[in-house]
Length: 512
Image (cartoon, rainbow, N blue to C red; front, side, top):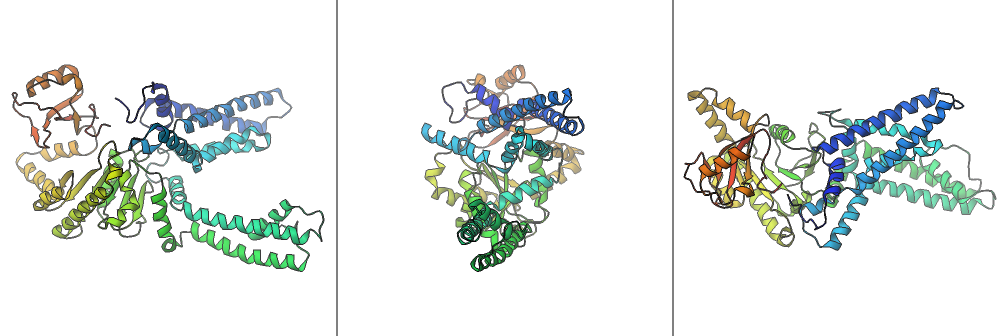
């Protein structure tokens, strides 16, 4: 399949490297990670042997040589990982060649300075003898594994907390750096006449030690003005430490909320999923999203008008705001999103919940119309799915702009009634709809089948060429579904196949 925004030159080698480091579902990624884990285990064994083997022994020299080979491996692996990273913006927008080059460079630079990549880069510095202990940082790869902590990854929670408060941490470290710079230069200028051997580096060291209240005592001001400066730095240090404690302890949530919202606006999240609405039953939707999506590849952002629930899993991002207000939709970078789910409030009356859902859908469409210039550059339109509780409001939701409407209460009631007459039918439908062995998918008719006129001819072709899928019917270009149509039913150009399979075997309507 042709890549969006691709060039004429063969991208296959680059795509293989990209899959090996960034596409978790690919076989190349699995092989790469297996080799990396083996090298990590080997490097840790060497670190242990280094502590017990006599450095005068010939075996120690062999260990050092092997360790340097491993370090070269990790250095090459880090370069390939950063170099094969692709700008997420290019998956959504078409850009001219020079802008594509600029976006790729900036995206890889941002990726290289993320906490995880910096930690791996620091681990490579173990090539210096005095820093060989940094090899232990490679163990953090194990903590980052989604399989090590399947349901509650504390490492992921820590990373999420840092990412959510990047601007605030930047502000705090800027204050610390400014205090150190001003204090160190001032001490140097004041104390040089009294202490001729004092250097500017000594001044910076004294300022940092004083601000952090460590107070080694190796450098002390002796002049009256120098001691006054030291007093101001001590007081400033207490304030600075209190600020860091407030950030880390999350005791300043109300004060930093606006900063966190602005931080999401400034992130580079694209092709993400936005879920509007949250109540006590939304955890069922989140469990389904976990089953259907790779949340490391497709970020899910929950958007509601209250603070983040304490029990919300860390892999789900949270943005506080009102999705019924057009001015608030900018908080979740809606123009860059792949899809939106508008979840109905099941704790409210059906009419009230549906009215809110319809208003949110209408607001989303109005927002997209206002940003039409940017939307026109997308490879595919934003897909909006709305949950309706009362079937009388389905037409209103479609009129408001929902691409797809799910009548949750009607579906549940229909399955209950049908199972009374046809025993076991509800179990079958549950297995089909829930993520499991088989699911219902919609896919594009294969190009080789173009020109086939009737439904029977299409079934005959697919029976000979497509294995592992059971065709159930067609969706016409008008959007109407035909389940098990007559053999002579005309297959119109642009129709989609409705089929049952263990996994998607045809290109989806979105082209992915």
